[in-house]
Structures are given as C-alpha cells and as structure tokens.
Image 1 (cartoon, rainbow, N blue to C red):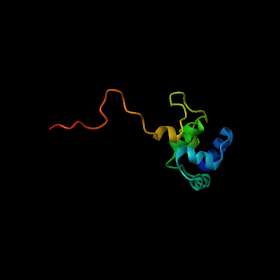
Image 2 (tube, one colour):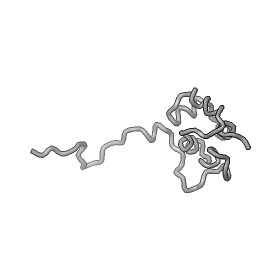
Image 3 (tube, helix red, strand yellow):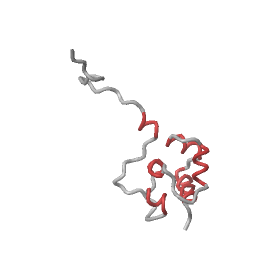
Image 4 (cartoon, rainbow, N blue to C red):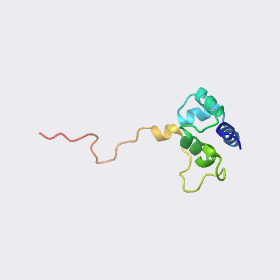
Length: 100
C-alpha cells in the first residue's frame, strides 16, 4: 500500500495543484508540503489537506476507504477565507459594554 506522501501527491495531481499552491491554501510553506510528500505517516494538517484536495481524510491519512470525500463534509474552502476577519453584526456592540 502506498504511503501518505504518495497519496498526497496523487490527490495534488488530481486537483492540478503544485506544492506552493497547496501550501498557500492551508497556510504552510512550500517546503512543508515537500516534507509531507516524503513522509510515510500522516501529517497534522491531514484534515485541512483533505478539505482543500476534496478527498477523504481517512483515505489521505491511512489509505482507508475510497478517495472520494464523504458528502457530509463541507465543501473545500481556502485557508484565507477561513481566517479572514468577519464584519461585525448590525446592532451588536463590537466590544464589552462599559458599566459605570
């Protein structure tokens, strides 16, 4: 059975992403992706990788089950979208109220 790095490379090829692009999507450097590609065991970023690559986390981490992501998981979102500040809600104070 292929190791984690081989499955990661297969998923990257299926999505047409290179190391730099995938690293930008999950918020790591290209060198980190390169290190992951040489691993036999899964990375701590496996959930983010699976989400961005639109594959099953179990398949990516351990080679279990089909490559397809289960439909119950959310659609892929880039790291930037997940971490951008959200605008304040209307009518809700921005900070704690000061009582005197």
